[in-house]
Image (cartoon, rainbow, N blue to C red; front, side):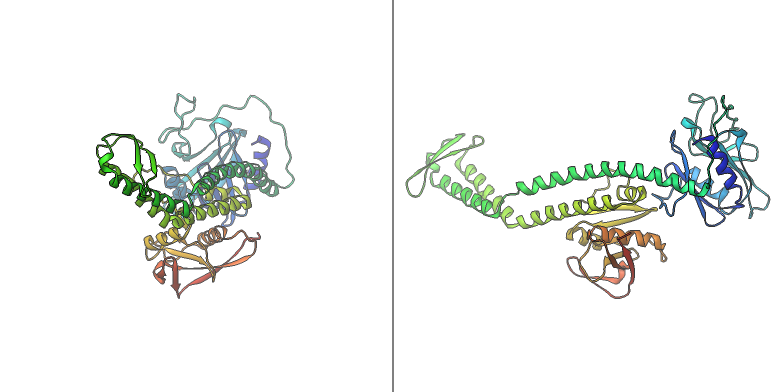
Length: 442
């Protein structure tokens, strides 16, 4: 950010007297709530930092690193004593004290918009580093940032910054968010749609390549016939032959090429009978494979529509959570997993996924389903009795997004899993429930 802009933002911040809460909403963005309701976001991405305001920015997850623990402990419900630009540079320094402490505990938070070394540093009254978003060693910079070390001042800038007047700081902060989000949103949409299109093409190819039931039944009959003919002509078959000439029941000759030589004709007949059995089984259960691929294709199409309809980057980040590499955890391809502010939200891609969700959910987990119509089943994993309403709303929106592309008002019922009784498959009954409205037009 430009130094002139930071100066004017600091003047705007100086009207606040308290920090109500402070926490990270994603890996590099810190949300600070001033005077109970004024939330300002500090995006501390290296070489692309910014300060912005927006109506809502959901957490991608709840962070519990040492930095986050100290951030909450030192600044939640703290009094602001001073806000300034440190040494006239691109560093916002906020001096605070805790109102509930036995003695006044002074803490500084430095938001450093210094390009490559952009950082958030928490300091005590003696300028000792308590924690930092990024720890920096002496091999990377002359200015070490490590817990327990005194923090040196940044060297003064060797130039005079130009002035960029801002008419309305609050409008400017909302504008920063809108501009950044629009650029990033379009880029993310293209990237994610390309990824989903690749998956869709792969599934559609598999669907096209599916054998027909008629072809599989004919294949089963053919191999059954070959197995019987081999037994009928066993005396004429020599060991390890790779080409058989067999006499059919109507005295015509049939030539059969084998993939390899077999020791006895009985092994050959067993091989044909085995192939016949597999073809019969595939013909019998072909509808399951068709339904599975069809439901996956429909799910990807709904996913693409949801991405296209996303109004902000936070929604895209919710739809594509970072995957944790854990070989012990088996991923279920019938269930989609999302994370909303640290809460695990699972969604059934098809009937099989819905059934598995119902079976694996715990009694206190929250189950969601669209009212009076077929829909995806959604489970919020929780042991809390009072779940935040914004988490329920986000899960309800996912339930609607992955069921229909229509833009309208929809009702979604939700209740603890213990109140849901499975009838057959994914068909359920439930009595005690609440209903929430989801408007996909906005």
